[in-house]
Length: 216
Image (cartoon, rainbow, N blue to C red; front, side, top):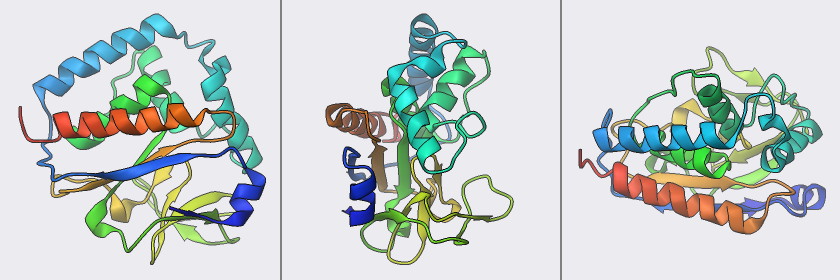
């Protein structure tokens, strides 16, 4: 991934880990993945409380980053914290397909947001840069595009914006049952050790290989 010098100047400790996993045979659901989900849900409820989860140092680092790029983390949660909060509030975790569910569970377990794209929909390598004022972005489950402001951090391929870093991926590059290769990005921010970001990538890749292979 190419990271623009303006990003590195503003956030010198930011790190990412990325790579591709495949070929996969993605299914709607898997009993084995359901068992892993139950295990992780129990672990989250033992580790965190809803009242204090925002004060966890890892989640606090992402909240601090959000404030710096003009996003209110009390309204738009960091992706991993949002999933943890669903568990603590006793809400059902979203089930999309075995690939999305697998890397979401890796994100919950590690606390690191994971971006993921259908590799065959990407036009070349990814670039991280600041958005231009008024650039449009259509994310997954968005009814209409949003207009970005200039200090938001985005990921682009050779043609378009594919993510608002580190919390919303593009609808055009989302993982579906037809996806064969997944491009993963483990998203770090200042204050999060590089080793934790790499470990999150490795876990997400392992879960994708184990649960996205079509073995039920």
